[in-house]
Amino acid sequence: MASLHYNELSADVGINRTMLFSPLPRPERLQLRISERRLLMRIGDSLAVIAAVAIALFIWTIVAKYEFSSEFLRENSVWFIILVPLWLTLASANDFYDLRLASKRGQMMQRLLLITAQQVVVYLIVFFLSPRDALPRLFILYYGVASFVLITVWRLINPALVGWATSARKVLIIGTDGGAAEMIHALKSESGGEYWMVGIIGDEHEVGDLIDEVAVIGGPSDLMNFVARERVTELILSSTRDLSGAMFSAVMDAYEHGVALIPMPVLYERLTGRVPVEHVGSNWTVVLPLDEGDGFQPYPALKRILEVSAALIGFVPFMVLLPFVALAIYIDCPGPIFYGQERVGLNGRPFRVYKFRTMIPNAEQATGAVFSDKADPRKTRVGKFLRKTRIDELPQLINILRGDMSLIGPRPERPEHVARLQAKIPFYRTRLTIRPGLTGWAQVMYGYGSTDDDALVKLQYDLYYIRHRSLMLDITILVKTVGRVLRMSGV
Image (cartoon, rainbow, N blue to C red):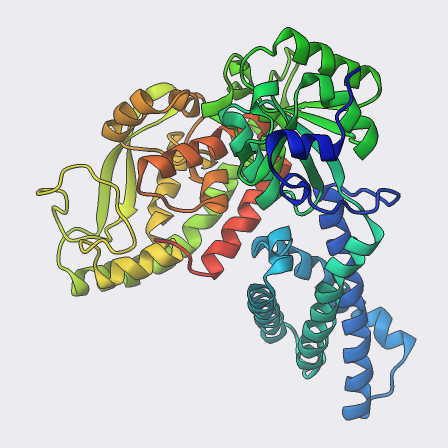
C-alpha cells in the first residue's frame, strides 16, 4: 500500500509538521474511558470522605474530651456511614463529576464549597430532628472543614495522576462532511482527554485542509500507514453518506487488522448525551427508540407507580406552600393565582398544563405565543423567585395524576411552537412518542432555551432520553434536578 512520509506530506501541501500534528502522548499506558474516569473520581471522593470522618472524630474526641471507644462507633456508625452516599448524591446533583471542571479550578472550588455547605445543612436538619445527644454537635463542623480540604487536594492532583498513568485513545476521523466538524468539537469539549485525534482521512485533493484546527493528513491509500505508525485504535466514521470504493476498502483493511469502527452518531451520543439529528443522514434509524422486545417490560408500569406515588407525596409541600404562594402572587400583582395553557402531549394529544402565575395578567395579549427568557419584562418579582426555585411547576402534579404528564420526559411545548419547529427541525415530532415530563434530560443537561437553535439542542437531549430511558437514567435526572433546584437555576 502507498506510504506517505510526514516530510513528504508537508512539502506537497505547503504546510509544516506542527500544523498537522500535535505531540503524541506515550502509548504504553492504561486507557480509561470517561465512565471509568468518573468512577475513579467517585472512589477518590469516597476515600476522602471516610478520611474526613476519621479526622473529624479524632479532633472531636480531643476537643470534647470524650473517650473514644468501639462501643461508641457501633452505636453511632449509621450517622457516619451515611455521609459517603450523601456526599456522592449531592456531588452528582451538582454535576461535580463533569470532567470539564477539572480544568476550571475556580468553578471546581465554588462547586465544592456549595456541596459542602449543602451537606452540612442536611446533617444539621437531621441533627435537630434527632433525639438529644444522638449526634456529636461539633463533629459536622470538623467534618465539613476536613472534607473540603481533602477533596480539594484530591481533585487538584487527580488530573496530573490520570495524565501520568493513562494515555488517550488514538483515533482517525474518516470523512470531511458536516458531521466531521460536529464530531471534532465534541471530542475536544466532551471527551475529557479520552481521545487523541491523529488527524482526518479524506479525499486525496483535501489533504492539508483544516477542520476546527484538525488537519486532513491523507487519503484512503494512506490510512493503513497512519494506523500502523501512530498505533491508532479506532476509526470514527463521520461521513453521513456512502463511502467511496477506495475509502471503504481502506476502512475494511483497518477493521480486519483489529481497529474498531465507530459511526459518528454513536460516539457523539455517548460523549454528549445527545442524538445528532441533523447529521444522521441515511442512518435515520438512530433517532428511533430502542426496541424493547415483545416480552413483559416492567419499566413503564414501575415508572408510572413511582411517579404517581411521588406526585401524591409532592402534594404535601404543595398544599403547605399554596396559601403563602397565593398571597404573595396576589399582593405583588393582583390577578389569577394559577395559569393554564394548552400544550401538546403524548402522540400529539393536546392537554391543559397548570402553573402558578409568574407573569402579569394577559401577558401575551400584545406579543402572541413567544418563548420567555431571563430578561422577560412580563415576569413579576414573585414570579422570578417562583421560576428560580421551580415552585411555579408544583401545580403540574395534577397533570401527572391525570396521566397528561410523567414525572420525567420531554417538556411539553405549545401547539404553535410544535407546528413551527417540526417544519424546521428533522424528527421533531419523535419527542411526542412518550408523555411529556415535569423535568427531563434536556432540562438538567441544557436548561432553558428561547431560540430555535436551543430547541434543536434540547431535541437532541430528548431523543437520547427516549432511546435510553430507564429507572437508572430517571434517578440520575431526579438527582440532577434536585441540584438545579438547590442552586436556584430556573429561569
